Figure 1: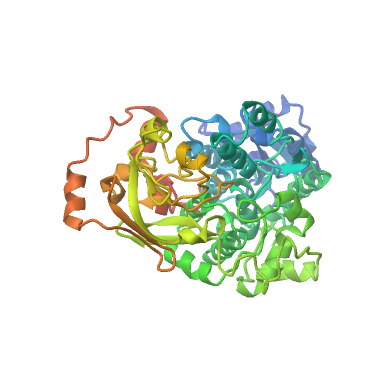
Figure 2: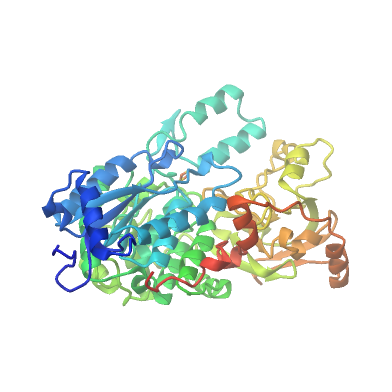
Length: 578
Ligand code: FES
């Protein structure tokens, strides 16, 4: 770095970027260098370009337990490539440790990421994330800050065995819990299961939201090729971290900002991948939010068009039978992209500067295990994993993960049994006198983005205990909530507008008839429109809105599911120099 902190092109780099404003640029640089020297940096190191490394380690985030060693490995890669690594903390979101739900804080983490990336002096950033909401938050923040960024994930857990049976969080968590509720498992047995579901560091072991978002980040081009599925505890994960650190410098040298990588075409590639992996329903919200930061709309109608001709090729839970470690061993995302090649936009550029075509050409005929990643003409399902539904009950759309559902329930007209809130659900779902039959449709209201609960993963309504004990395994369930990416069942989610925003869902009463038609992409409430409007006008007043802090910001600005549950003032501002 020259005396004025420029890189020879006249543009400041490294610690000379974005100086603190004291009204005297030279003083600002002198002061910053002085304080940086207090951390022991030599002049030679301070002359290097800076790669910021987002450290999301938290004692409240089990999925990020390995972040410290990943950060160290990224740092090694940065130094080896001639840069200066500087780690810094942001918000970290551990899925099972947040109340009322992690999604409520995703936008907070994205704002933290965006502002700290923009405000601090770095030429590029490595985003180290993993758990469900962290990767979308980081991609959203990076898109808005729009400096060169490379995503690195912590990677999935390995499975373990109990009595010879392979277990992994968290599809199996739900299966065993359902067995326990139905009386098929004792207290002692469920306690033993509890200790064997999540036995290594890393994110959930199936194609849940975390792994879906990792695959989407790679499909978008925001991650080093081949790194989405490496298990958290595999040594390759550390080598990937080292390579990611080195890559960040090259990405900066190429001037490849997120707005050049995340484009309408790469977003469509990511949607194809989401459909082909039978990925999490949450990912459609997150991808909408990431793309939305760059002004790229994600249409649920377009999702349906893509879903009609994108087969599910990956045989993993919750849609199929394998785990993420099987996906990695089978060839990982690269093998899937090769199968999907005819459907992809191949001119999309990745953080490496390569196009997708160049990446796939370089892979050549790489290894693939066809029992896990099926050939295009021998799919797990002939159509995509997700489908959007529209109709009088969901004018703005709703989502069904058909690859993890019982298709015998796809065409159905039945009676609604309504729960007006999460509290009402908890109070009555197992009541012995609950008037419910296996053929009914369970409806949950007031669990959407505008509700006080902030759209939790409560859409996987439990089967009422009496029915579960009688052997009922699945029912149609409809709500404005989300569902864990690891869950399964005939579950209609993200009903938009949500009940708290005055959507038709709020007008459903027990005894109403609802018609679901997956074939027609329809979800209809069979009640006269005038009666729906009368009921909505009579709805009880909304609970008092928060008056301060982040809860108020959330309540005042959160968008519906079709807007990615982002804040209205954050959409469409990315890609501009901050
Ligand atoms: Fe973090 Fe599942 S709890 S990925």
